Image (cartoon, rainbow, N blue to C red; front, side, top):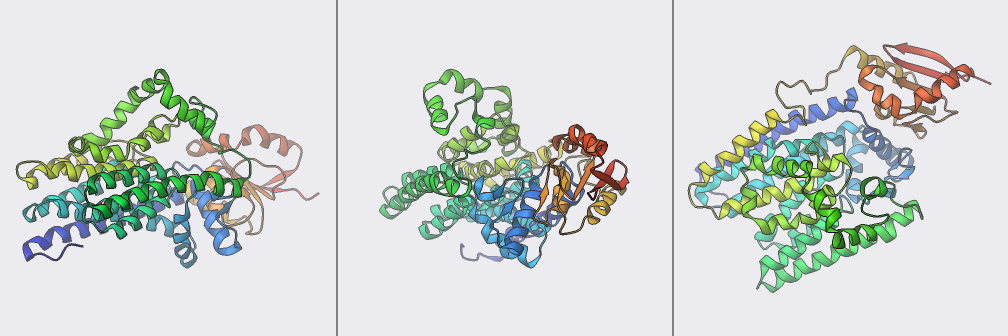
Length: 474
């Protein structure tokens, strides 16, 4: 950390810290409200509630029924192991959502340190404004609010890695790069590019060049280790279940997809210039006054990640309200800082533009709960309370079939399925308007009437569309 400066320079740092605390307070509440109300409730809350519960209470490594075993079957995310003590101390997913919010907020301090290191002393207020702009940046909110996810823990480490790279603290550069790498296997692309970038900007510093090249090689080894060791160990010969769903239009395997990208511009280019890709790009850079475009070398670090996201057919990877924006948020703010570094004029005035625009976009874009007039904020209604009551009626040792939005309320057990499965002890459903999507997703409309007609289950309790059934004794 840079040495302390005179009293006039202490206020910007205090502003950043206070802003971070306000952000943590607000988004911790919002994220926990989303959890307990099942707002937009797809199964991820339940996946990780059960995964951490089985780890701390059953000695089963991040095991959950939705993914059919350990979470390592789907993603190589050892960063979650660092969070096990937090869940053990406060065994609820709410504690991890608070930890996730703190991790995201830490990115503001990283932006402040990077900008203070890059700018002159007189521009320290500008560094504080960019840090606050980060806290107002709506794609950052989308990462934080998108349930509980591993990528949220990558944003701050990436920015810190750049900070230490430019400070020539290569040991810490490696520490934060490895922390980012530990969040998910596909972070290998970004960290590998970061290593190459570090080697390039360090020239002729031999130590920096070797550090960067070594990191690039390690990232490649990590990707190979994930694909050839971790995944085969946890899921055997089964392929990654989402590849054909996301990238089937590029090929039936990663090799075929890479070949398509390199040899079929007629397929790739239309995807890169389609309307939603262009709009995504504008939505990411416009709140930052397009200043990141002044640092194209930094933007290249996120190039492969951009391709991975924009070539996917999954809507979440091109949505600023999703977790997938996490690495891009980090790269864009580093590019913002380094792009402004070369500007002439008063940086304290120039920095107002990203700050003001980030605030305006935050209030206007309908991807997070802080958009005016704040109608997206989750509310604990009487119906939500009735759902809690019905879930509490299921014994802890009973097996349950339920839908995705109920999964988190019932996940602290070994046998709970967020879809229809026969012969469970209980079935908990809710086909009211707000939750009908997940009722349909679990196939209850197709299968439940047959079970009831056969007399296999009886109604125990109901309220406003939520119903609890118990298996009939045979």
